[in-house]
Image 1 (cartoon, rainbow, N blue to C red):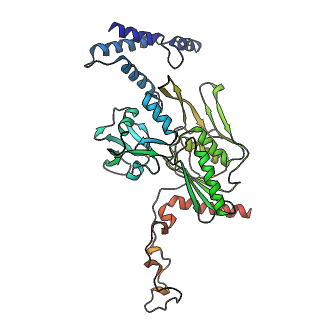
Image 2: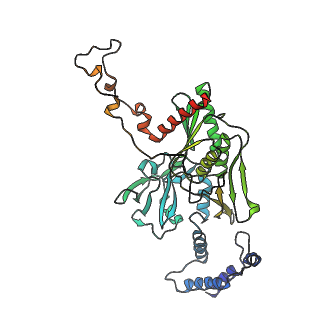
Image 3: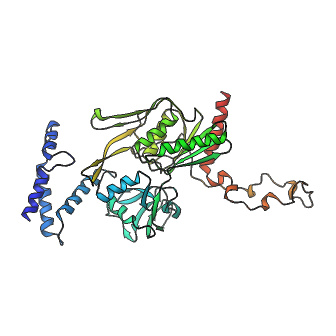
Length: 435
């Protein structure tokens, strides 16, 4: 017992923490006119000793110290955390686009796990999980009281195994139970197609190391398909929870020929980072619309803010998530690290994204629309009259007699917001040609 307590006192009074001893910290505190809280450090050592002596079961020293580190970081904000060997490895794999789990990005809110966004083409999205959902139970076990890391650990597991999420959703009276089968999550970061003539649709599901490279290849392919270049582009960042900062900066740069992209502010002014655009524009000034919603976070908000402030694109949808803080991964040793919030993001005009998000230029509700009268316009037509003459050039069947598949449905019915973005893009293209 005395040996353990002595180790804790050594930890409290001099052990190296991410490269700084508490002696060095004390000197830094002294330079700022503060003193190291020795009473609280001794209380920490005393509590450690009481746990070692009186807790109902024996606890390993290293395990107890890890709990203390986790608590210290999680108490700062929802995004700072300690990463043990498995978590650190998962983080490194996740940024490359393949990892195991359900396919959702999550945070903490009021002690519950909040879904920032489901990832495209993953078990969670297919099961109906939505941005903004609050997960209150995991396999019947209450989430309240768990750390975010503990909840994530429960949600991970062997591919093919099931987990039951109990979800509270805005506008729904009772909790929803959703059964999800775990799988290997392979994130396709970029996909897209041509919409109606030469208008490109590019969807970025998440910002990864290869996102910009994949996007540029896709845009080049779509340009080649048109033969005469693109008339406009819709960039879909809905339910994109963010990812790699450099990916967001380079995607923004691809559509900007000048101007700032984003800058960060830290406690020390000298450590400010500032990113600016290089003189090129991959779509050569063609009009752009960016779609966002409450699941667009972090890196997505950087792109939306940069294109909005530089008047390069019209932002459509709903206010974004508002995660405007920078997390830096700081290795502690070869296998573990801490994820620490070190700065805030600011858009080129000086707006802080944190807890505010990006307000769209045009606000759109997430609506579903249906054809009226089966898509027929007006009232009775010639074809509706009894005994009418047939066209003579057809087999006598009506267009409505043919079964429609999903590709035949109007875009407005499949994705109302995307349809509105396309209409706006066509209008911008017309104005640009006239001017």
